[in-house]
Image (cartoon, rainbow, N blue to C red):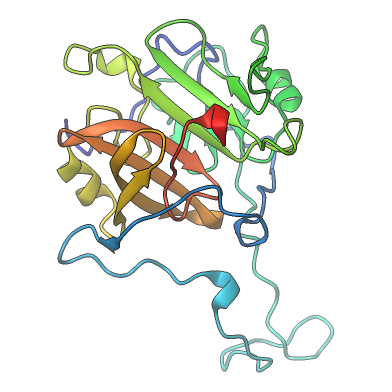
Length: 261
């Protein structure tokens, strides 16, 4: 499965997929201010040539000195102009025309449903498809309809009606026989069924984690940092991507069943 494939695979995706028209600018929860929901095992670079992951912004040293190349600001203080917030990530609008050249998955969204939205807000973005928490765990809401492709959005057990924190994709059919159009991919072309080597090529600075999952046993995961403190977590089973989780609060991977978080 080539890393270069970048089209949406979504004929069976109930919400459709949007052309990138940039309508909302949600602010996802700040990972440094919320408790980690995961446990992590040993962490090591994914490949010998991989560089270390970016340092945590919260622990980065600060200084009051302006950059040497800073230009005078409008108020004449000489301080550099503020940079755009890393959380200012565009959220595309819904498009029932299904643009096959667009991308279904980015670190902060699935189609027009974005981290930072409530389930109600997410449902308003997708005409004809209600997005609501499950009865047994109201912080988990299916985003896709019936079928082997299952994508859920997850808020928090302590605030089910709060903002979406991350998404999880599981394909419950046979990956070996699945149509590429049934498997949404990231912008870099990684989807369920992609070989682990494709993940390494697409995300050379990713980390490999051995997750001692109390619910499902030892899991091998690859964690790739994305803009705005978002992360992809690729579950690797038998050398291929079996599950994909993405959003905030995932810097150390993820463990446990979603309904038991």
